[in-house]
Image 1: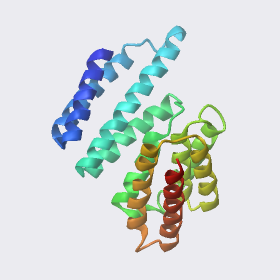
Image 2 (image 1 turned 135 degrees about the vertical axis):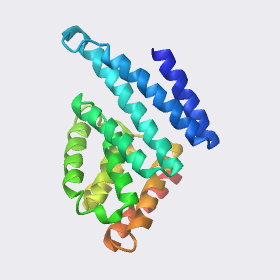
Image 3 (image 1 turned 120 degrees about the vertical axis):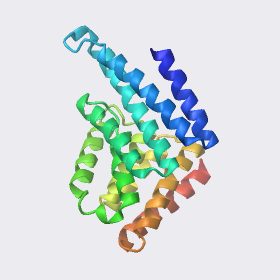
Length: 218
């Protein structure tokens, strides 16, 4: 099953890289179906399979995150939000030390509808609390955890905490390509919030400037 899922996911990535998003979506959905069967076949009542279930859940949440990314590149934002929501629920239900789907579920909603910022304030604060626990523990050395935390603090309008998070991000040793995956998201949010939330847009711009300077030093 793992080989089948990985083969399908590889096809999805190649199709996405070519811009053939519909084929990528189909292949990634098929890969998710395989991962769902993999997880379902692990006996939930068996304590000896607890670690295997968690690993299988992590793979499944990752595949939903990849699907969300494909939908996002295809401009199918509502479908992307739903894919990230599914991945977020798996992260939550299995208490995974991950925040990719959670963060992107919030961000994609704001990119589509910036006016949702007040409505999502509770979820943003909850997400900050979740990631705060993770970076105090098992994810303290993961640059992507600090990137998620910094982003959530920015949209939660906690710029000082965001700056501290990005300093930790820099110290965790990201490569230039990693900076290149983080900065465009901030730029997209900055553009969306410029008309309605100038203070938030300015904070996002400050973070972008900091990260661009840090990237040049890496």
